[in-house]
Amino acid sequence: MLSRYDLLDTYRDIGKTSDVRFLTVIRHCAAENTTPDYDRTLSSLGREQAGQLRAWACDPDALGAFGPTTCVVSAAARTRETYALGLAGTPFVRSLEFSELIYNGVRDVTAHDLVRVLHDIDPVSESLSVIAHNPSVMDLAFALVDQESVDTLNSFEVGTAMVFEIHRDRPLELGTNRLVATFHQERVSN
Image (cartoon, rainbow, N blue to C red):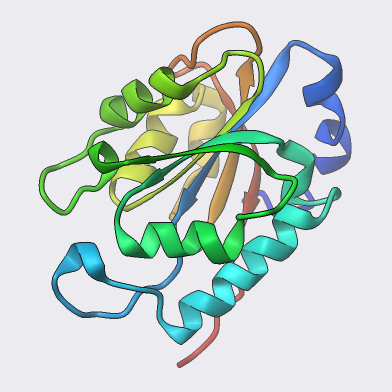
């Protein structure tokens, strides 16, 4: 399994100097178990996870190496809060869009649905990021990767960020991208 340090030296400056850019797929941080689902906010653990996400996003030797991004965020409260506490105001995000279309509490959101929304906001010249929900983010991860990277995917826990290499100057394509880094939250008991 890749960790936040695997391959990072190889990729730190590549987005600025070559024919690749990156797509970072983030599963929202841990949320309270309340209803209605759309209004669920982050738990105390989720707020801690968002703090770790922020530290990675501000670190040019960690997730920050893969920005700046155009970011699309599900409009649900827990994804908006993950963005606000984890990424807002960091150098990792250049521009932001919220989308009702990628909230999967009303309907099943597929990998193809996420890709359509990403295509709508994609400047095709810089990296992208998305904050959404499972199972959509895991489905997207499997749909994105090339055959070599499939074996590196195993789970998509809350607060996790996976970074995929995508082509610069071309729209996002499925099945052709390489997983280059994964940022996992430390396991914390409640």
